[in-house]
Image 1 (tube, rainbow, N blue to C red):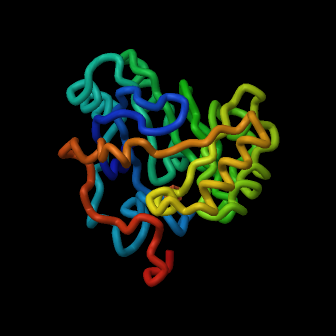
Image 2: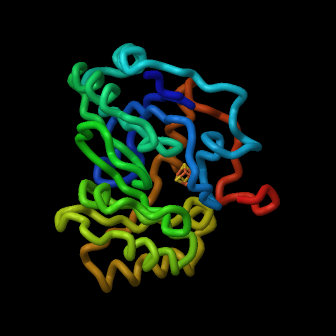
Image 3: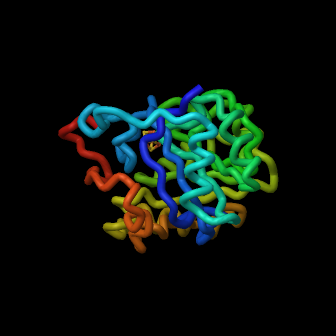
Length: 230
Ligand code: SF4
């Protein structure tokens, strides 16, 4: 099979437990969640999606990873919503290179592939994650655009392993504007529930992804654009 690759680039992981690790990102095309603040709207929104995407086999992606990043860099499969695809062949090809393979997903379909790390970002206002994906998550990122998103996200996590890390991330437009309602809600929630952690999208401060010429540079309005319906 061939995977629709929206973009690929070599940078570092900007959030979560693996923050700061060199990482090669493979961003697959397609997502039905339509998050109102999506910062990867080029993978699904009619006004931002490209005329075409590159279709690549697992072997071709692995060859690109080997040529464009050094041994030791993890590979992060993201989207879009990569869980829509059977990732078994891709993960196996990347393992054959000796790479760790991480997945970022909203968990809306069965997980196919022997991933080394699963980051679940539930989207409760869209389709919530399947219990079988919640049970396989190593960490969770709850995106907080409004303080009510915290409880809505936590309510999707029945069956999460006890050792999984749960992050509360300010949605980027809220973080950029230092929205006190969102930032203070995260702070108070973490203080009241020590299992939770306050997070941040560090790569956006560095603009680290932009340094790779292969990353998509199309400006997509962070924080959503209500006039465009999302
Ligand atoms: S799940 Fe991710 S890619 Fe899909 S719309 Fe939401 S933020 Fe965008």
